[in-house]
Image (cartoon, rainbow, N blue to C red; front, side, top):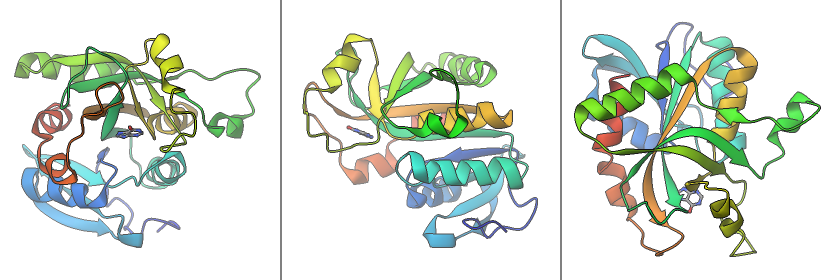
Length: 231
Ligand code: HPA
């Protein structure tokens, strides 16, 4: 048991898929996994362990934002023997080349957060995905006939930004999209010698202002799940 996870030792698989929403974790467990059991429910941040094609795999909500995923990823890596965390989330598109429901493999993550100050580095930390997971996800997508975009994302600390045009600066640096978690996930993995990847589905566009509904988001991320489950 850790402060935020009430699972037994060895309750988690080596690989944990992490959607932001704990109810999406429940949805994934109920719809994709077999022999599933609920392993943690502190604050209703549900985590499940089950099997996919005979392999043990877990799925747990991360909550929204860097502080939330930072807590769960650290405890899973440090105290539950987890080796790989694959975030399966949503993002807002900054690139004109992205449409709703397109999939991004986050090769790197930029941030406006102060998270890296935790590590007292004498410079700027570039948060990157694990190359093996990235390559494997890319190949899975190719084999499944799913188009993916690979590149940089912004992990923002602010959803409702006062400067409504600030995102254009990131766009000018070819940052594909905005979400709120990957920078911390990647930094924690680097610090603890673990592996991480973020796979994102475009849920809205900063350019066109198109949006998906919460209900569509809950159910329509099948392609992303196929990539993640077959890693
Ligand atoms: N901003 C930040 N995080 C997000 C967004 C967004 O527009 N869409 C999905 N996650």
